Image (cartoon, rainbow, N blue to C red; front, side, top):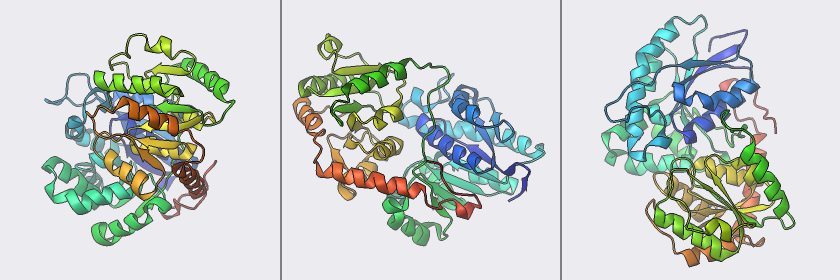
Length: 419
């Protein structure tokens, strides 16, 4: 790879969804710490995700390529991020961004120090490998999930996928290399399967767990953090006494689901933090008053990493996105799995059935849980001697140890991670 005084130059192209952009920013942070120069391609409404990185790194090493979001007949005007639409828009957003092929080529050809490689999200690999080939550089596919999930798709489902999804998965397989936000103790067997039977090469790297940088959007102040952390401190007379409930930026609960979760939290008598989206239906009348003192509701963004890492938090009711699961694993909390869609189900299978570090409580995007059963599960989840909690603690130790290993040496990068 070509380099100059600022090291190897890499172009990062994230998929426009918080669950994809954030781990790619964490990977970017690690590359910048190791002396690489990185340009990140974003559209204007996603630029705020870069604020934490821009505050940590020099502009000579971290650069931005901001291009207007191309219009698309299927995407509502003004939408540039998956959080504003449902999962059916995945191929439409990728298709829209493929129209940035020519502007990126023009930028590349006029750059005094053009990138030596592209790192692109797997959901963009229907077109980014072709872009890289046009530029004469390798495309490295960034996979936000684990090899367990991906190998299941590629072995069992590839031929039956709709053409738009099959094309992006084939592009991922055909990329020069693949990077997983995972680690060998979870994925070694499946990574080996992918190398031997699917990609037919060994340019696969498990570089996780990627330590999350501070993720507060620049438009938000310290308000929620200043409210939440003191509240958790007040709960800390007994460790692991709080349940955290959060379903990410993509999932919106229905009115019936909101009522069931609220009822379960009320019946359980546990202390809790519940993050609700502003678009969701409100909680039942009087709920906040009845749980005052032992429950805290956060609307919109929450300092999730700080919450999960607090010693008062013992369990996490999650939709099982891989980012959410990894944050829970690194925090050593018990995961309560409610997989909703897509690869969430495969992640739940891995966490519950294979690793034994999570408890399955419900599944399905439209499923309404039994409030009484969920209440019992929430209450039981705070017991310190649960086998799943013991195994989760061991997995956390393994994950933290893997961070210290030389995981990026094959990329020619100094690989000692700062803890």
